[in-house]
Structure formats: C-alpha cells, structure tokens
Image 1 (cartoon, chains in turn yellow, orange):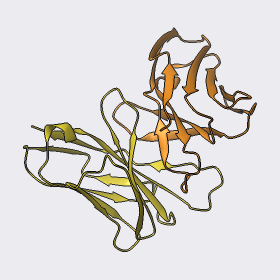
Image 2 (image 1 turned 90 degrees about the vertical axis):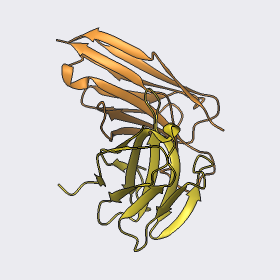
Image 3 (image 1 turned 180 degrees about the vertical axis):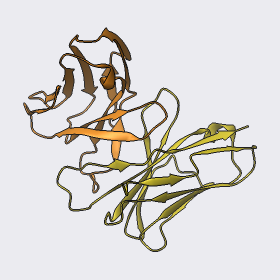
Image 4 (image 1 turned 90 degrees about the horizontal axis):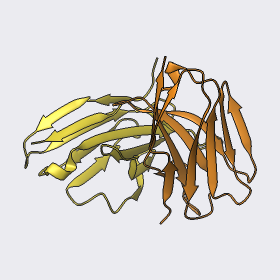
Length: 115
Length: 114
C-alpha cells in the first residue's frame, strides 16, 4: 500500500533543538499539506504545496518553521529552536489538484514532544 | 475566520445503538467534510457535502448538510465497536484556492461498548 508516509513517527527533543519531519505523499498527488494537531483539538492548517511551489502559509507558521518540497515529491518540515508549545502531532496529507471530492489522504503523523 | 463547533464532545454508546454527531458553523459552509481518526493516527475521509439539503450515505453512516448550509450532522445506525474513534468535521474556506485547506472542529470522541 503506497499511502502517505511520515517519518519519524515519534520524536522527543529538548527545548532549543532543531527537528525535521519528512512526508512522502502518494506518488501521483501534486498537492501536499501540513497540519498540526494538539491533544483534544482538530488539526490546524499550516501550509500547502502544489508541486514544488509553496502556495499558502498559515500565520501559525512562525519564522522558526520552514517547509520545503524541492522536487515536487517528498516534503520536509523543519522546526528550529523548538519550544514546549511546539509539542503536537504533525500531519501530512496529499491530494490531486483535479480531484472533485476534495478528499485528503493523511499520513499517520509525526508526534513531537519537546521537553 | 470560520469556526466549527461539534457536539457532543464525547459520546459513549452500547453496540447496536444509533447516534448523531453535529457540526455547526459560524458562517455558510462551502464544502463540509467528515473524517474519522483513530487515536494517535491519521485521518480517514468519510464524506464531503456541498449542496444545501444534500445527504450522503456509506454503509451505516449518513451525513447531511442543512438547507442553510450552516449545520451538518453525522448519523451512525446500529453502531459497532469498529465505529469507535474521533469524528472530525472540516470546512473548506469560502473563496479558498485549495480544497485541502480546511478548518476543523474540535472532534467528537465516540466509544462503543460491546
């Protein structure tokens, strides 16, 4: 099954360290999304790419966050100088631009714990 | 910005019972999505509704969007333990350029006792 793959699944880090998450979307999907989900809340949109272009960023994405999709395939989300408030599940999703249902295919997420 | 309120926040039912989860928007909904999430995992797409009065069903799950397009309900008939999880409604932002940029409700936690 070649669904959306995210790595690592879990990351524990100390405050101030940098972390990077990787997302491999479904191969033919040209749109890729990053969401963040804290405990007891629904996911919050962070940013999305169409192919390699980052088309939109949420105000939630502070300057410590950077996302890339260099070749229009996999994407990385880097958080610099992590803070305890960054502890969350980071979800990646992909879709086809032309899809009529608007369905997003989500990965299983990368859970970040900042100590 | 659009806000979605889900009710109830949690629900415990006996297997075989019917149940309904509601999702209310502060603004007109231009696309309403229902997803299911197992604890600690990603989201699974259930259904999308766009037109006022629209109703869709898949197996024992039925979702409706009211005529005013500000409220949606998700109904499960004869619940099973496999229905347990977190149900999330998500709304497409009006005038948005991407179907995938959604605002989600806080989720409803469903527990089904055998």
